[in-house]
Image: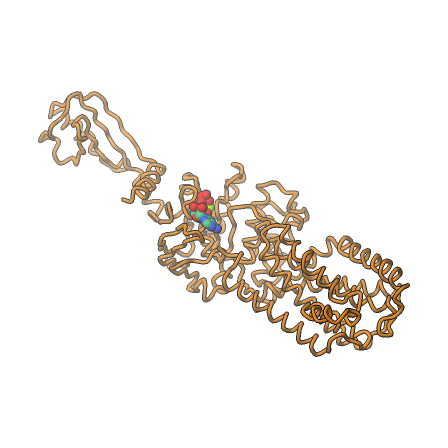
Length: 253
Length: 311
Ligand SMILES: Nc1ncnc2c1ncn2[C@@H]1O[C@H](COP(=O)(O)OP(=O)(O)OP(=O)(O)O)[C@@H](O)[C@H]1O
Ligand SMILES: [Mg+2]
C-alpha cells in the first residue's frame, strides 16, 4: 500500500473542504434549523409524541441521516468528478497507486466531511430538543457505515457523470425522496399496511430505523436487519468500484 | 547503453474502431533525449499515454526499467514523470501545494528542500503561494513540469513542452532539459518543431498515422542532411549517358533534360570539379546549374509522404 499517496489525497481533499468550510457548514445548519421550525414546531403541535418520544426529538435522527446522505454523496461525487472534469485525473492515473488507494483517499475525505457536518447538526439540534443517546457505540457505527457507503456511491456517480447536471441528478432525484419517504419525519408504523409494505423496499428505511434505534431503543425494523442492509449496500458499492477500475470504465480510453 | 523503456508491437484501437497506434516497437536508451516528431493526430500522445497509464493498450507490451507497465505498474510508474500536452491544473490550489501533492502521490516523503530546488529551477519560487489560476499560461506549464519533477523521476515525458511558450522561456526550458539529462534523466519529448528536435535531441523518431517511420541518431540524420544535389539542366535532351560521365552515379530524368548528382557537402572531395571536367569533355550544353540541400524538414516530409502512400 502507498499510504503516503492515500494521505496526500486525503489531505488535499480536506484542504479543499476547509477552503470553503463556511459555505459547507452554513447551508446544512440553516436547513436543519428550518426543518426544526417547520416540522418540529408546526407539526409537533399536532403530533405530540411518536412511540412515546417527543416529536421534536423523534425527527433528529432522520434529519441527521438526511444531511449525512446528501453530504456523503455530493462530496464524494464532486471530489472525483472535478479532477475528471478539469483533467487533473491524469495525475492519479499515472501515479504508482492502486484504485483502492484512490478510493480510500477520496471516500475517506468525503465521509469525514459529511460526518463533521452531521456532528454539527446533532449539536445544533440539542439547542432545540433534549436528546438522550441509548447506544452511542452503535450510533457512531451507523454514522460511519452510512457515510462511507454513500460516499462510495457518490464516487461511482462522480465517475459516471458526464456533466454537472448528471452529477446533481441522483442526489436530487433519488436520495432526497428516499429519505423523505424513508421515515425521516415519521414512523412507518404510522402508515397504512399497504404503504408500510412498500416502504420496506426503500433501503433508507433500514438506515433511519437503525440509527433512530441507537438513540431511543425503538425501531421500525429489527436492528440486525438494518446492519445487514447497510452492509449489503456497502458490498455492492465496493464491487461496482472494483469493476470500474478494472475495466477503466469512463476513466481510461 | 541499456534500454530503459522497451516497447514491443504496441497497438491501440480506440473505442469506435480508430487505430491510433499500429504496432510500434522502440527501445529508449537510458540517459538519452529522444524527440518524437509527427504531425497532428500521429499518435504521439497516445503512445505516451499508454506508457504512463492513462490509456490502456490494445495489444503489445511496454516495460520501464524492466518493469511491465501493467503487471508491475507501481515500479514502472515510480520512475516516470509526465508533463501532459494540455494544461490541466487545479485552479484554486496554491502552486506549492499542487507540487507537494504530486510528490505525495508518488509515495515520496515530503521534502521541502527538493520542492524548493525544483520551483527555483523553473523560476516559480516567487509564485509559490499564488493560486494556480492567477498564473499565466507559460507559468502554468512550468507548474506542470514542477509537478512531474517533484518525485525525482528517472524518465521524463514532455508532451509538447514548448507549445505556447515564448522564446526566452523556451531557451530556459531547453537548458533545464539539458541539465536533467546531465543528471542522468532520460527524456522523451514530442514536438512539431523540427528545430526543437534538432536543438535538443540525441535521437529523433518520426511518427505518422500510428506508425514509427524512423528512429535515428540525430548526428546521422544531420549527416544525411549534409547531402547536396547538383542539378544540371540541359539545353537538349540526352538519350543516354555519354561515356565520360559514366562512373558518377548520375540520375537522368525521364525526358533526358536533367542530370542530378548527389554528393556529401562535408566530404573532403565532392567530386564536383571532376564532374564538371567530364561535362565539358562530353560537350554537353548547360542551361542551368543549381545545388540543393535537403533539410530535416525535407527528410521528415518525405518520410511522412512515403508513410502515407504506403511505401
Ligand atoms: N480518447 C480517444 N478516443 C478516440 N480517438 C482518440 C482518442 N484520443 C486520441 N484519439 C485519436 O487518435 C489519434 C492520435 O491522437 P494523438 O493525441 O495520439 O495524436 P498526437 O500525435 O499527439 O497529435 P498532436 O500533435 O495533435 O498532439 C487522433 O486521430 C485522435 O483523434
Ligand atoms: Mg499530442
